[in-house]
Length: 177
Image (cartoon, rainbow, N blue to C red; front, side, top):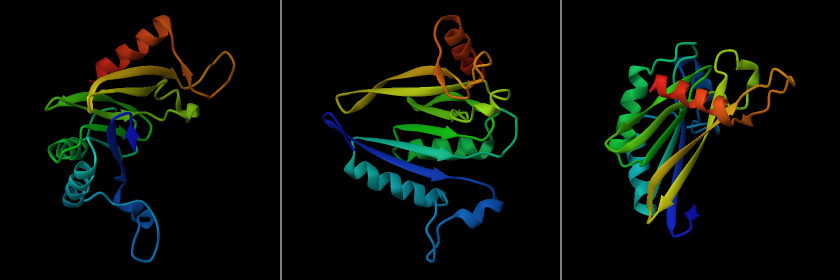
């Protein structure tokens, strides 16, 4: 995907539990790819050969309310960067997780549910990320905090936060990082 003068490669994977294997693609059916470390490395190398920037999105982590970053998540995230990814962003069921800078490259472990405001009691915030690209490199990441539900209106649609609410949301992410 061209972005001004830069070519951006985007790869997305689903890293579920062993019980989710029925969802994965096989020779007989379509479905998401099971991310195997050696295959991830090859995919990233292929994308990097055709792109200036490679972004990897990963759905990972167990379905629990704990916001800690799992060992397997950390192994995968760092392997993605080691293989040539420039930016890693994850999603994990039920919770937000922190941010890490690994070898100068950002890893957002989980942005939370975002569009599922009914889970806002577990994670009241979600985040939109804006990547600023200059001279074929990611030079800045802007974090835009959103509320996942509005108790006053009963809406479960994301709303961009402003003022003190935005500061609270950013502080929440900082505590997780």
